[in-house]
Structures are given as structure tokens and as C-alpha cells.
Length: 552
Image 1 (spheres, rainbow, N blue to C red):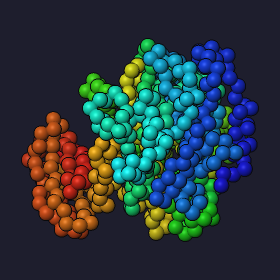
Image 2 (spheres, helix red, strand yellow):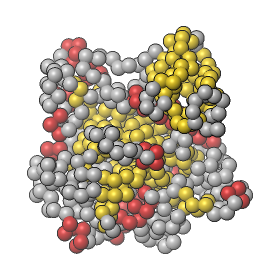
Image 3 (cartoon, rainbow, N blue to C red):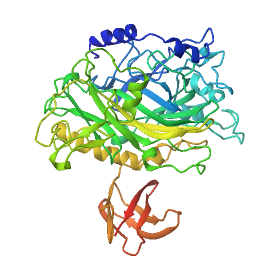
Image 4 (cartoon, helix red, strand yellow):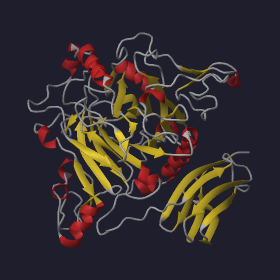
């Protein structure tokens, strides 16, 4: 359950933030009937569920609404989350985002001029589609409301089956472009009203959201995915753009949480600070990660138009903090830096007041600044279990965090996609859960292409998600050789190929029938010129890919 103090925090936020005259003047008046979204739906997987809203918020709308991301036994994993988008034009910051409201996204798309549509209440709806719905229709013609009304006219993705990509004709063979086994879809924009929290102008952007889960055992069944498809309107490019997810943790007992980050798994995560959780998990609390499967920075409509830097593709920053009045901020005042500049600082990996995050330890030879906080393996340095290299532990508590990608230039008309994955993993104890989470999130990231491939028309069943395990390569960078660790659930035809950056195959490390079980696959690299290479693993219908750096 969400603590009662949430209502007091939210009330304090509403009372402490007034709509500035400047912000109001920069935003065109919304249509008379364009109100804050009221739609709510439940995102459900085999082991978890939580409410989502069409306001930019996840798992929390207000103290009177359904709230919290929980396992099937009702134990809390996350309390709240929300989408943040920000960018600059010269010295002006445009942003949409909030922690616990008031919200800064409204129902519906933007028109060709970047203005809110007149009938925005028509879009105050979250659509739900499941694989079972499509199979039932194909089997006996039974049809659900959302399958019949799938809003292709609003931008909902369609798998074309009738040869006309501009329509949605269910009888003609079109189907919703389903991700996972159950998907929710909605569209929203940041121009439907005043930005009370960030106190600034809209970007403006239209955001199409696909939230989905897989009905399979294993790590994918413990994962929830949120794909944000962002289209920027306007006349001029915005620079230093960032997209982030604010997360209010609350794992089990809200007051005994720690957080950390993993730059290899590209995630921030929350775990229990000690060996026993009083919030229902007992001696085996899980760790919950918020990973970035796809970062911003590439024009999806013209993918060759601009190169994408590695930092733009991945997690660019991670910052964590406690409740606003428990010492994390210089003054005890709810949301003292809660307007746009403070939020944007956190999206850059800075303290809300602009101070850099500093790692200070003898192991680093002096102060080092970083945009990603707590990257050590718990309980080693630099983690909350050992913040200074001398074994000093941070006091556990009520944790919030911001996981962001960027920066990049936001060009009018471009489409950006940012995909977040929420993964829950349980080990033998609270620290082993972190180890297991790192393996699980890495596995999920390796299957990004499969996860983001929608089911097409005429495919009653998707390509099966095979519960195999793949890790490596190591060492990376490599010199003479690198190794992949592959475990197969059954005998499979397996092929491992190596490619250069031009897509040319430069080697085949494995090809043939592999028995069930674990295999160490050697990738010879001695004859390769130093540089970056890609590898691709194919086993049955499963495929994964990654990169190897050759250095000498």
C-alpha cells in the first residue's frame, strides 16, 4: 500500500506550485472540452500487475486511484513512475514531466500544425489487445470491442494484411501490430494545458505508448515493457534533449530500500538494504530494475540521416534521492527544486540544484564526477552499502530515481522511440537478487529485436521465446580470442557469425547441431583488425546479437 503521507506530499505539491503567467502565455488555450485524461487500465503479466494512466504517469494518479506495481501476492515492487521529456532552445527549457502530479500530458495526438485536436475527449481511452483476442477472432469470429475499434486513425500500430498500409480492415486481414502477448496502447500530448510542475512551455510532442507483457515462464514473464514513440512538432530543432523515467521505488517495506545502477545492463535498480524485508518478502526480497532497451537519438523514419552516439543509444544518466524532507535536499521544503530546471538537472545526472555527482575514494585517486550514481556491486564500493570505500553504509530509506537517455537534437517531424523494461528477479538473498537481476536484464537486452518484433497478419502464433541463456563475450575488449557462454534447453541447430561494421561476415564461430546444456563457444579474433565487430547467435527461431571490441 502507498503510505498515507503520499496524500500530504501531493497536497503540498499542488499548493506550492502555481501556474506562472509566463508559462500560460506560451501555451495556446486548450479546447474547452480538453480535460486531463481519466482513462486507466491494468498492465498484467504472469507474476505482476499495476495500473497505468494516459497522463504520463504509471502506477499512480492520485491518492484515491488504484496504485502501485505489485506481484501477484499484492507485495509492492514500485510505487509510481512517470515519463519526463525535456529539451532546450538557446537558453529556454521546454519540458513535460511530474513526480506525483499535477500531470503534464493530455489525451490525443497533435494535428499537422502541432495543436491539440478539438475532440480530445475521444482519445481519453486506453486500448487493450491480447493474443487470445486475435486467435478467438480467427477461430470463430468472436470479437472484442478494442479489436473492432483498434484506433489506426489515431496512430495505433497495424500489421498490414490487405495490401493497404493506410487502413485497418480486420476482415481484409489487418491485425493490431501486437507486441508481446498482451498490449495496452494510448496516445497523448504535452500541449493540452498548462505545465504547472515544470513551469515552462510545451516542447510540443505527441507520444504514442505501447505497454506490453509476455505470457511465458522465466525472465520475460517477469518483465514489463513500455515503448514511447515520440514525435516532435514545431518549427526549429531543440538541443540537449533527454527522455527519462522517474521512479518512486517502494520495494516491500518502503523505508528499507537501497538503489544502484549497472552500466552494462543499462539500468537503475532497487533492492532491499538488509537481509530481511518487513513488507512481505521476508528473507528473499527481489531486486527490481528499470532498464533502457532502446535509447533516443535516431530518426526512425530516416535511420541513416544522422549517426547515433553510443551515449545517446543507452542510459545517459542515473540519479537517486530520498524523500524531499529527509536530508537529501539542503532545505526541508516539499519539491524545492521541483520545477523544470531541477528536473532537467537530474536528467543530466546532476543534483537538482546543479551540483555534479562526485565519487570520492582512495580507490579513485581523488574526486571524480559522474552522471551515473552508485555503479558498484553491492555491498562493494561504490554502492549504498559502501559509499566511500571505507565500508560506510548509507541509511536505508524511501528512494526515488531518474533513469534517462540522451542528449540528442530533437528535430521537428522526427520520430524517436525509447523503450524501458521493468524486470523483477529473486535470488537466494537480497544481494543475490541484484546479481540475478543483472543477468536477467542483460538477457532481456540481448533479445531486444525479438521483443520489439510485432506479430503480423496470418501468424496465429509468434516465434516462440526460447528460455535459453547467453552471456559474454569475454574478455571484451579481446585480443586473441573471445568466448560466449550458451545454454540450450534442448538440442538445437546453432550458428554464431561475426560481422564487421559494414555488415560483412568475417567469420563463423559455430555451425551445427548442439546438444542440450551449456556450451562455451570460442570466437577467434587474432586475425581481425582492431576495431568493433558484431556477432549474431541463431538457435532455432531464437537470435541474439552483440558487439566485440578487438584491441591490441
